[in-house]
Length: 105
Image (cartoon, rainbow, N blue to C red; front, side, top):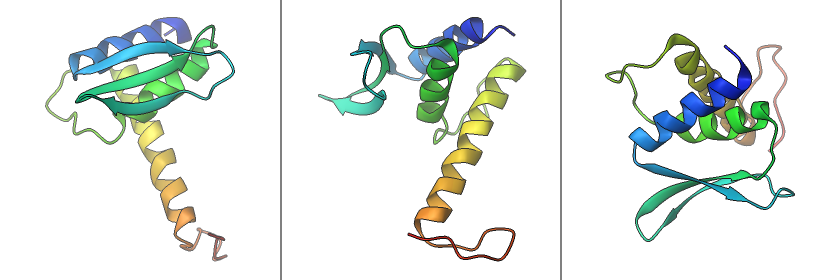
């Protein structure tokens, strides 16, 4: 699936899960916040499709989407983001990597 189409499908998924997806300044990294009880994903204006995919998939990664029908490529993008999130979290807490080295905090 084309990255642009994937980004749009992820955006639709996010909206179906109650998120608003909004633009933000092009020089920002994007963010996921709660504003007045509404979950909002900020995506930099003019961002490449791959960056949009990364930001939106990362926002969806913590959600339990097992009972939600998702096109396989959309589910895979969210799973990859989930894997990256858990790896980052382990490293942040100084857990061992597969090669036996302890990562720094």
